[in-house]
Amino acid sequence: DAKTTQPTSMDCAEGRAANLPCNHSTISGNEYVYWYRQIHSQGPQYIIHGLKNNETNEMASLIITEDRKSSTLILPHATLRDTAVYYCIVRAQYGNKLVFGAGTILRVKS
Amino acid sequence: DTAVSQTPKYLVTQMGNDKSIKCEQNLGHDTMYWYKQDSKKFLKIMFSYNNKELIINETVPNRFSPKSPDKAHLNLHINSLELGDSAVYFCASSQGWGPESPLHFGNGTRLTVT
Image (cartoon, rainbow over all chains, first blue to last red; front, side, top):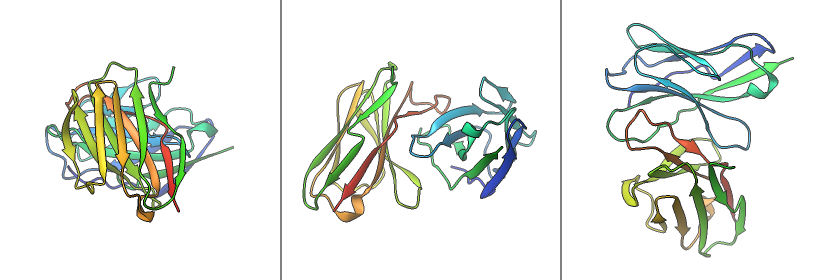
């Protein structure tokens, strides 16, 4: 599985968009980009995933660069409840395990 | 309704004991997993089962034995517990084996070995 690089931590003002970057320069063409988050004392929560195209769901948007070497998770209107560790994961086409890194600690502040 | 549920939520036991953690999913998924999150907060896969068959075993000590009585259940048995087994254990499930199927996690079982 390709390695990902994320900032250790980020702050965001409540009500503003939170943009979380992720570098995955060694990603191969058949590997998916996944985002999960883990709120304190809870299990990891699936947010969104994509292969090549940008994706949007009720939680967030995923923007993948054309060369696929980086991506950005966008939470359009962050709330205090979005404070969590956010994990960017590159998942191989074969072998279905998710390999978690250290993630980004996002702190949403009022 | 909880999609992936684990019991117990907390488990405190002494070294050398044998314990089990149960996991059930009501999502109709056919693939289930066990992950371990240690004190440094890193999440690592331990096992994966697809249609009740073991698919992934990530060099976990054989004191850990998963058992899948049916597709909706994946239980974790741990024999001869050691201090280093203290961690939070997460169960997860997904629809299918492929990379396009997200994993859905339970809320974990915090195991403390004294």
